[in-house]
Image (tube, rainbow, N blue to C red; front, top):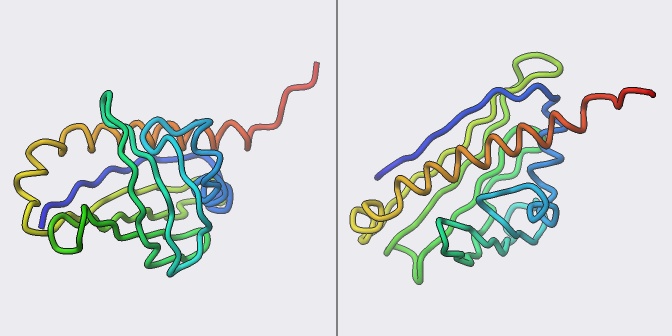
Length: 150
């Protein structure tokens, strides 16, 4: 098993971060990694995601395996058929204070083609996680700061 993991501190409530993370249609407005997504945050359902890595865009349809409101979202995706190259993607929102969370994004990769594929995508996938984390932070914080009156 190969695992990628990233984390970032976000100055917003767990509820706000969850709201941004699970508003899948809005991904096209702010997310540089998963540039398009559709579906609902309901365990057992599938999302349709478009992921951008470099110049390539890939569509995948992971199944949501765990949905804990304001805390955790997990999905499981496969390349072609289960067991060849599987990705268990996990988002964790850990409340540090009322308006601050640690956001963790990780993926555990397994399957027969794991080593071969990870050699090709590990670096760009890690960079995609970091870019998405930063954009999520910006999006969640932007909407929690009251607008200055003029």
